Image (tube, rainbow, N blue to C red):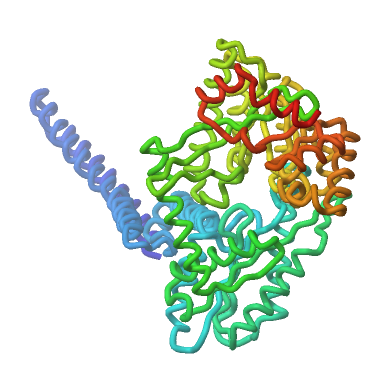
Length: 561
């Protein structure tokens, strides 16, 4: 209405201005006769007309100015967080297209912010809350339920998911993760008591999930729900024409018994999950004081190893391997000796039992390989032709660039690939995924030899052992201990030696430190021995002298002849 009145008044002003200008001009020409006077009168009449036109033009500009001022006020309201108010009415009336554009812009901004919030707070694969969202919500839930009884936090780590990713690809892996999320929702809906705040499920990262149960009546209830999760995730997951098989290791922490805030609970649940996985996977474990002490011991061990690396307390020593038939020295295994101030220690093949900090384990593994390759190059210059066996540990193979690093260390040095033999344990072979197996096969095609250690002790199945194209297989020391006195132990060793030969590999016995053991091993067809009495691990200079002399080797040959 106001806009229409302003348009009518503007037109009337224009008509009056035009009529007045015409009348003044006509009157001037009729009454003024002189040329100079006519020119002056024309200028005055022109200025009068200009003022009238200016007045007419200012009226619509004032309307637009009010509209622009209203738009500026609306934009400044964004600073206060107002993204919902529509464009001002003054803007819509004076400039309807601009008003519509402003409304569309704010709608697009709101939609984009909603998308950004979803990406920031929810996992795009499973649509579950992510770590940031989980921490925010869980802290609020714990504060609200602190006085109402016990809560439980379940820390879930999937078993075998890396193999699914390697075998089927990341697209299929994402589908399996979405199915995992669906099963977690189903279990929680079916098993959790519908009281108070609903349980909170989240995907923290990779194959790690968590469930916060705001109210549980007892430890047994938390264990019951965790057991239901283990059973649900142990069922096959359909993926295309195939089925994927996973499992879950779950750590359980209770509030306030194991911690009153989320940080304490997550630490406790993570420690319990680690123990569940180390105990055989597919298990649940409730945090307790014993686990806390074990965690503290692991932390102290990690700190001591970090100091050992920085202080140069680690030394590479060499344990000879001899042929049982001829007594010749055929190789040596590089063993890490820790010259600890309290007395020397030996580092196990699987550093996970001693070092739990991945960065330190990787540093020790790289140092071992580099030091061993340098030693082997010196051996060749000294005239030694024996192979060198270097253990490769779990943490080294788990890194993304594992085989590129191994290839750079083993194939670009001054020694031939066939002079090097890398050894993996049977327990590590059991956990090798498809990527690791392909990498080991590629190294062997490049000429690097493979050795499987601890055969008969680890979790590796015979199918997995047969799939590894190894050159040598070591019998675990536990199989050798009673071989001279126990017919059953001798029968087992004989069968395993024949099995190893059937796979096209050489059989190596470990820790045969008595003469009668050597005689039995030679009788059952074992090819080599390592760690026998008189040939313990020794420093590099001592090993080179020992190998060049071959005295101990000749003694072994005479003893077993």
